Length: 327
Image (cartoon, rainbow, N blue to C red; front, side):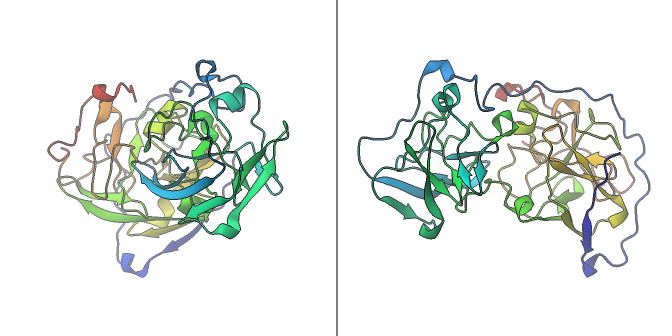
C-alpha cells in the first residue's frame, strides 16, 4: 500500500466548519485508462522527421518571460516560441538526454553568442555540452528545448507530452506547477457563481473530480492526453486547506510517479479550458467531469449544493466535441 505523507495546515478561518455528510448518489466506475500521449519521451517521436523552430542565423540568443494561455508565465526564445524542459534530463549536474529522433521533435536551444535575458535572473542562465559537442542553454541547470509542433508564438502544445515535457518557467521549473514544485499547494472552499460552494486551488482555479476514477482508488484513470486536458493537482508533500476538513485529504501515486492530491478519496484536477478564477467550463463535460465540493462530493449530490447546473455558456453537460477531446 502506498504510504503518503502530507502535512496539513488548516486556516483558522475554517473554525466551526462542520464536515458535510457523505455524498449521496455519487457514482463510481471502473478505471478506464486514457490513451497515452504520443511520443516525446526521449526518442522515437520524429514530428514527421522535420526539425521545427530552428534557431535564427543570428549569433545572439534571447530568453524572455511571457504569458501563455492555459499555462501561465513561461520562458520563450527571441522569436516568442515556448521553451521546454525534459524530466529525463538532470539539473545537478546539467545534462541533456534528448538526442537523435528526440532532438528532431524537441530542437535544443543552442548556446550561441551572448544570451540576452528579459525577466530572467542572468545568474540562473548557463550552458551544457551535448553528446554531439554542441552547447545548449540551461536555466536553473535544466536544458531548454523548443517543440517542433509549436507553429507560432503562444503555442504550448508540448505541455505534458509523454508525462515528461513541460514548458519552463523563469527559474527553470515547470510552468503551471510552481506551487507543487515549491512543495506547497493551497486548496480553499469558494463560491462559484451558479454552482455554489466548490474547491479552488491557490490560483483560484476550480477543481474537478472524474467519475471514471474510483473513489479511494490507488491511481488515476486520467493519464496521457487526458491529463493534458485535465491537469492533475500535484503535490510534493504539503497541502494547506481552508474551509476543508483535513480528514478528507489524501493522495495517490500516478502512473508517471507523481503524487496527486485527493479530497474525499477522489483525485482532483483543474480544466485546461478554464482561463480565469471562477470559470467552471468543465462542469458536466461528457457526463463524467464535475466540480468538487468542499465535502469531497461532486456538485449536485448533497443537500449543500445550491444548484447542479453550470453557469450559462460554461459548456456544462457538453461533450466538448468542438475541441475534439473525448475526456
